[in-house]
Amino acid sequence: MMSKIQDAISQHNDTKSLYYKQILNSAFGGEGQNIAKFDKISFNNARQAQLKQLKQDHKATRKLSDDILNSDGEVIEETQYMVSESPRQFKCNKPLQEAELILDNNKFWYLNYIFNFLYKCIDMDRVHLCNMDTDSMYLAIAGSQIEGYKQRLNGFHGTIVLLLKRQNFARITSEPQGENIVCLAPKCYSLYNGNEQNNGIESLMSRMKDVSEKKANLTTNDYIKCLNDGCNVKVTTNNSQMKLGVKSMIGMEKSALTVIHNKMVVLFNGCCAPFMYGINADHYLVE
View (cartoon, rainbow, N blue to C red):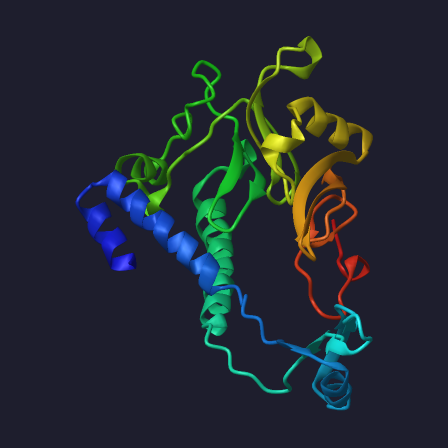
């Protein structure tokens, strides 16, 4: 699939390149998750359930029904139990180690690109790294005051910048662009135009974790309030579940926006450091 993407890029076919990219991303997500069910579930009578409970593989037992008697008091159907067993050995056909290697290797080259290319080739006094993800980053650029917010690197000068503009070096492309951005945590941000003091905010893009963006109905003002006041913004989500043949609607309250960051170690000056065994924020020296 990667070869097809490269062929489409060499042919300058953006539609086909994006199509194959979407297929590759969805396939990688499926292969990188071990969704196989290794528990063995069986339905047994009381005698069989009692024997299986003595095994080391036994996990749980649940009663499903009682004895059914006829008019003469005879048992026509015995009590049924559902027994769950967890085998001590099983076979996994998913290439999990390949997916983990790709993710770890991607993080290495991501940091290598930032420190060995971006920081050395661009005037970082005019660029602020706001947010980053696995394959993208959001930059606040102080460029030309005449051009609008879609100027990208046009306000910069130098040989390296000209190379970036002409050759599209390292496949740098811009997707959403705006005047302001509020970043609360990884994959939790809001991009907007306008000024919150004048109530003229135009929301361009908002992202949040573990909550549907359409059902939450949050605005950019919620992100700004969460950042300034340090409060949690909660929303109620409704999900339908099927249990024992009965379908019910369950309402659950979740924290859509929060100032808590549990992905990295946050230092007292706001900088973030990766998790390492035995290392906490007190072990870092910040000037």
